[in-house]
Length: 267
Image (tube, rainbow, N blue to C red; front, top):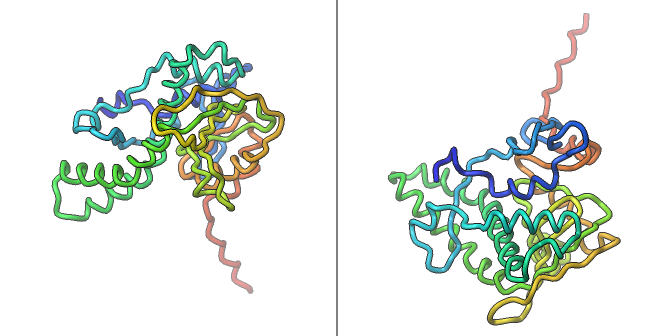
């Protein structure tokens, strides 16, 4: 898989944030220059950062790392569309939905470890090492941090909460481990599937396979009220919303610092 062939892991999710009334495209905040922008069409071209992929399977080999995420694109697209419109009957069979949820978790974690991967690449680049040695060390670092978490999440129970009253934001690393990020810690993880639907995982206590995915309509944000705040605080590259107002309200956080102009010389 070459860089030019690799689509961003969140491309399937971002389709749910596309504005399709009149001028079709995606509203996003460029976190680098602090500008609110509009990306024409449905391809989310702004999500173009280079992705360093590491397979988190227990017995992954070099080929697995090179191949990229092995997701079922058709099943994932069907699941994300069903979640967006709160129609579980259109999401596929029980097995299809379980597979789609695990694909979502896989893609969410790929985005979650990018910052660590890029930092490790930069760190090892300062050492007298060949490129393949650097890559191998980065893979080992990421696997040491994330393989255990991936195994835990495979046994979590997952629920799709849909019909949320406040539209969700999404950034380049939208997987939230509320056990770590929230104060006080909350025993769940989440991943936004669309502006009005959230995938939430909770410990199941099971030793084997997790149970079927549940679907729940909700009328309040409840424990997810801080979701958008976490998205804003963690955003480094881009932040997507369905309304421009949501982005303008946080724009000052990302606006580049402009040096103070020297005072005019007094006569």
